[in-house]
Amino acid sequence: LQEAGVSRDFVDRLFESAPLPLLLVGPGQTIRRSNRRARELHGGSPDGEPIEALLLCDADGEHRWQTRDGRRVTVQVSTSDIFDRQIGGAGLLVGLADLT
Image 1 (cartoon, helix red, strand yellow):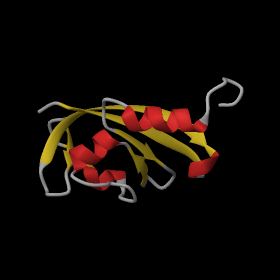
Image 2 (cartoon, one colour):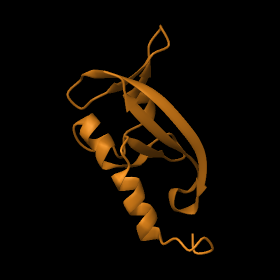
Image 3 (cartoon, one colour):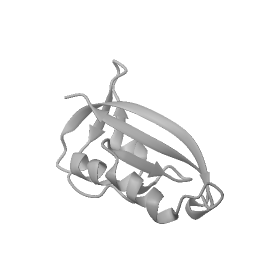
Image 4 (cartoon, rainbow, N blue to C red):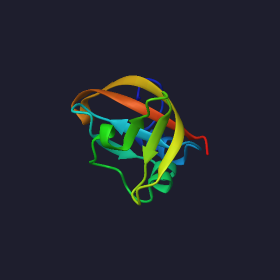
């Protein structure tokens, strides 16, 4: 970040203010961090939850997000592999788009 002239605070604000739900999934497939839109979709913070318990794939191939109150929201999923020492190595950035 420093080489690019970008502060950690700027990246944190960018993540938090993104217009789509974003999840940072760490080793062990646990959600390490969520942004405001992801917390709104979930109905609270999904941080600490296993991603496979909340992001479900139906038999028809559609992805559904399991909200805190038990609703299943159809979502489009985009992912990007990342590596970060703060999360303990390799991780995954997950973007969700609510299709309902």
